[in-house]
Amino acid sequence: MWRYILKRLAQAFPLVLGVVIFNFTLIQFAPGDPVTALVGDYPATEEYVRQVRSDYGLDKPVPERLALYLGQLARGNLGFSFANRMPVGELIIQRLGPTLMLMATALSLALLIGIPLGISAARSRGRLSDWVAQVGALAGYSVPDFWMGQILILIFAVGLAWLPSQGMRSARSSATGLEATLEVLPYLILPAIALSFRYVALLSRITRSAMLDALGADYVMGARAKGLSERRVLIAHVLRNAALPIVTVIGYNVGLLIAGSALIETVFSWPGVGRLLFDSISKRDYPVMTAILMMVSITVVSANLLTDLVYAALDPRVRIAR
Amino acid sequence: MARTRTLLALGIIVLFVLLAVFAGQIAPFDPFQGGQEGLKPPGSPGHLFGTNHIGQDILSQILYGARISLAVGVSAALSASLIGAVVGSLAGFFGGWVDGALMRLSEFFQVLPRFVLALVIVAFFGSGTVKLIVVLAILSWPQTARLARAQILSLRESTFVEAARLSGMRAPAIILREILPNALAPIVIVGSLDIASAILLEASLSFFGLGDPNQVSWGFMLNLAQAYLRQAWWMALFPGLAISAVVLSFNLLGDALNDVLNPRLRESA
Figure 1 (cartoon, each protein chain N blue to C red):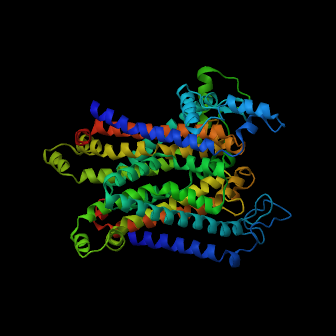
Figure 2 (tube, rainbow over the protein chains, first blue to last red):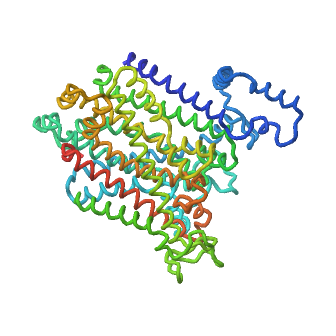
Figure 3 (cartoon, rainbow over the protein chains, first blue to last red):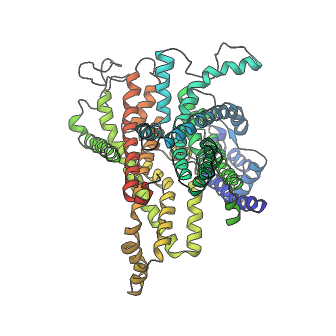
């Protein structure tokens, strides 16, 4: 197993490096002159401009600038956001909590709903309920998640007035501690449902087909022949083998979840990284955009890596074969 | 029931293509023409789907919006399939370092988060219909490339390719005339699913205000609707239904093609 882990880490490293270099290249192409961004539109003296260029290393050749950039990254320096007047790293960390809370809730919802749906579809295979579940899953996958959010707002916030639709807590709130956490719950419900929608569809589809594959396997026939109860066959043999493709689909679609949360946060004014990305676009805050892009890319690479490792832990064949 | 699904999907696609082509003839209004009075509800005289905050006709905007959605979706998916097929063929046919380099490249593009990357690129370099198509195509080819490569690896050793080689055919001709036609089925399936995801991506970008500023698009209609959710539900409902119907149809079509072209999978899928 250790050899496999090391091997996969070695494969992920060039990807991360590629992502970083790609980001550096993108920054070089950022519209507008960086000096203007730093000194503003004031007519600066030539001497001052030269001073700024050398302070920020803009007069050095590209490879040297890349080295400087890598050095900054290694020290956790993601650049400076002029629109917000604070370091990009700090800005993102402030917004990370709400985003993680939203994503974790959505993912849990998706697991709790999607997997049972897939199992029941597989067990009623070929019947009308299966067909409905299948088309429903495809429909859920096809509906834009941000539109789903707007429809949820129309029904539950505007129409029924059951739940709030904007932000994370009431502006008048002064609660702290546990009370403050509980206060977030009603605000969390709609965005989490909207974000989980496509994942529920995806998970129920893959669970259904993975279950069907496993149900048709010889070892299931063997387990039944041995006289195991149907319940035990399902849990110990079918679900365990069906777990592999399910894990893969969850891990490989983290990018989808992140993209969805950027859109959903915008619809619900949820104060997370996605909303920050949206704001940075309207403010043309390029350092924030590239930093978020890099963070997201590295998260996706790590999620893929983690998925492969979990897969290898669940299925010994993988780590021996490769 | 698979037949019903396919026919339904094809029907919706043909309907939207016709609506897009004849938008100029069918639409009751110029999609950009505002009115004296905004936010008329659906069913108001002359405005079947209502109007938006500046009095533009929602129905007319949806008809014109079909053009941009379909044009971007289909062109981006076609270009992605083409790039993918070429890259995959080269990798599969030549093997060795060519294969290694091209597959690393496709892996790199596959891990990049498509939506966020497209967002940043368009925010950096500006938007426009052609730019959107190029960006979406560049971000969508790897899956097709891997498929094409896998197909070619298995076909390369087959007897009919051997025969072509012995008869003196050269590599490009073998790829084009012998291998690709046989590898086409899965590429077409992924292409259909690619159209669906390209349309969704275009809608998402436009929702963020990064679509083509000179065109009506469904995503941007939803962007405008966001500010008027409390006053005008129709501004959000109709464009979203249009996106969902078209995307669902291409997904259904991809599924149906999968069933038809891959009879072996019909049992398990």
